[in-house]
Length: 262
Ligand code: COA
Image 1 (tube, rainbow, N blue to C red):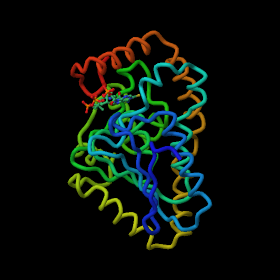
Image 2: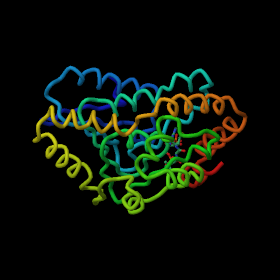
Image 3: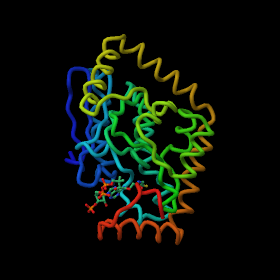
Image 4: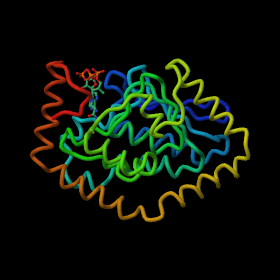
């Protein structure tokens, strides 16, 4: 299994850690494969009642899809919906999942967090969908899951501006369930997981499946539209120019404003 995804079972709780802290846990293909491997392994297991997903290090849950890889992707890759597929697998996984967030959860990192059933954030959490600053759009569920959580008006504001918001605002708009000190994020997520794990396993799973069915009656169109729209953007000059600028700034270590600028 890839060392970009760590897995540990603590009682009935499976703790899954994105592990590329030097890249702020940016989600690359190897990490996506690692997540699929962990879910494959867990699917047949009857011992797991809750998944807890977190990021290694104290700087980020995940700073989004790997921009160096994204820059090289073209329209067929967008249509393959690589990140959207793994996030949907997490959303559809039979047992509930909890994102334990410290630091940045941006772009695909925010989309991974909102594919989970619940979110516990540390005071350092910074969440947002900065994709438009890179000439692309959220295309791993951001356009349909974010409105469900925070309402269409707030989702529009976050997606059109690419603004990154702090933990208090995340809590205020319902993007996270709870905010605690950073040191308490994993313990709080584990306590919540154990509280759920103590309930009837089948009852919790069926409640999850029922709420998922209720939450997304007409989602199919948005899912297809998201990847087709991203396919157009993946081949655009604007995307190439903006992503090259991000990577160049990274190379020269010039300051940037959270990835939301061009
Ligand atoms: N893809 C690829 N690499 C990324 C990345 C991403 N999404 N996010 C961070 N990194 C890399 C940086 O390039 C840098 O690499 P380097 O050490 O080789 O130069 C390293 O991670 C550390 O990032 P840095 O920007 O120096 O850390 P920071 O703590 O000052 O800032 C962020 C953190 C998250 C604000 C900043 O990295 C950022 O804006 N990332 C992109 C966020 C984004 O736009 N995500 C949406 C992608 S679709």
